[in-house]
Image 1 (cartoon, rainbow, N blue to C red):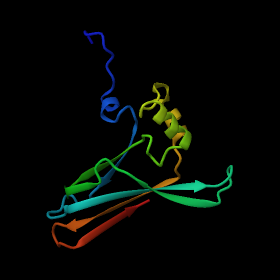
Image 2: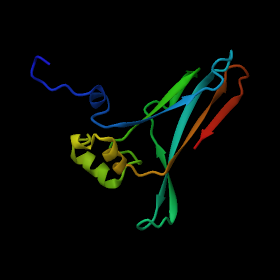
Image 3: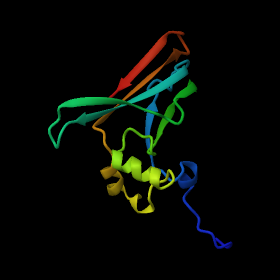
Image 4: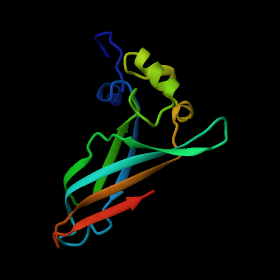
Length: 145
């Protein structure tokens, strides 16, 4: 860069210096005429196991917010994106607190896959999709854990 400023990766600007969790939903019938899903909605629930130490006493189910949870015309692939920011229920509390103290961004020394994993706190994700079949006009659903 010739003007003396440090360039940051694109996602640093796009997601306020926070990493993202991405996953793809694929329409298995995408090669069939009329197989599109109209007015699709994606919802994600995180499952956390809670209890003292390593002893699990109960499960906690948390809503995981997505950048784009609606799709007007799903024909092939839809990428779900969740920002791991100070409001993410998938992070440990101390990580959320540190992100808030750092003006909403992750500290730069946390940008390592192993370090990121230590900040996560969930056991599983449940992804559901609902919409209307473009060929039959009936409601369709999908569930994946």
